[in-house]
Length: 157
Image 1 (spheres, rainbow, N blue to C red):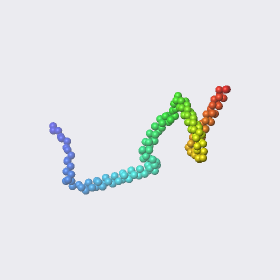
Image 2: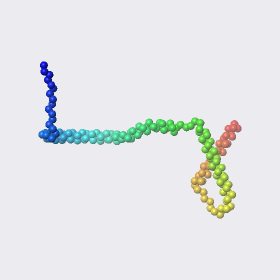
Image 3: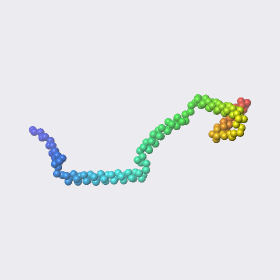
Image 4: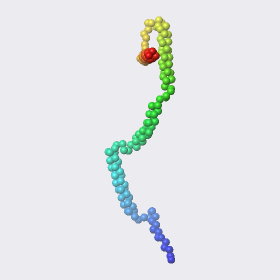
């Protein structure tokens, strides 16, 4: 018994010695035509997708929205959380700071009054920013006075 060896396909001729250049050109033309047709089909699908939804290819925008939705609750949690025990001392510190500012302004006003006789013939100019500060201080003093009155009424009752 003899074993038959499988037959090998014939080796292709070397590249430089092929005679079927015409076949290659025809294959290349047909492949180019199929590529062109595929590109046209893809372009038509692209146009249809854009007509249906203009933001269909906005990948970065969609990604940014997804990340923003994930981060937004964390940011809101941070903003909504207020310290439980530190709020009262902060308010007291702000109150003391306002009181110190008012005391300082009164001290400056007294010093100016002492020197008024030297500058009696001169015009006095007050900026709008300073007027605003004085207005805020007066408003705060009135609010503080109202708080004190309410506190006294509660203590009497």
